Amino acid sequence: MSTCQLESIRVRLASYSLSYQYNDDRWRFRCCELALEALEQGNYGVGAVLIDKDQTLLVEASNQVFSPQFSSSAHAEMRLLDKFEEEFPRYACRDELTLITSLEPCPMCCCRILAAGIGCVVYLSRDNDGGMMSRCNTLPAAWKNLSQLIVVKEFDPAHELSVLAHDIAAAQQEALRNKLIETIRT
Image 1 (spheres, helix red, strand yellow):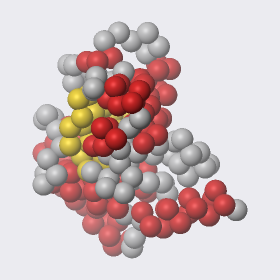
Image 2 (cartoon, one colour):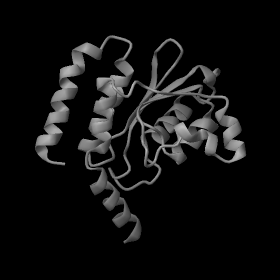
Image 3 (cartoon, helix red, strand yellow):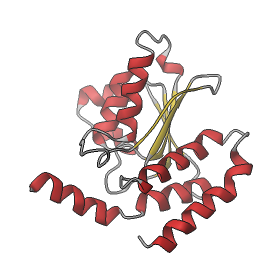
């Protein structure tokens, strides 16, 4: 991705700031901010937040697979759940929690979300190549059963925040996939 393309994404995000800072979409906007931060640090552009039934932020995280050092499990959702379980070890009513993420969770993150007992997942951008939340009906039986306990929603794909989340996730994706292969095979 060129500097010009990255700057264009920054400008779009900044232009949305006032519109979304204080309304119902503030957490979806925050996911985009976190995704851009991850991208700027050389990671996949994915951000996630976990909110309670009152729309209060509990924890947030961004993808950190490549920085500060390589960690294959440092996906935004995995880091978010690690933080949540560390900060709220005895949290009751996990079924009332909503995890919002800028990109549809991968198979690893999907299963971790199911095992954590989160009640609802909302993703801004579908991941046709690697996403799993929209395909829970294809999971092995035990995981498929767990998926019956969760509500999965794709946010309006035509919404400007979904388009932005998609563009952030797609930025440098090929270069980052090549970096991953190089990292794990050298």
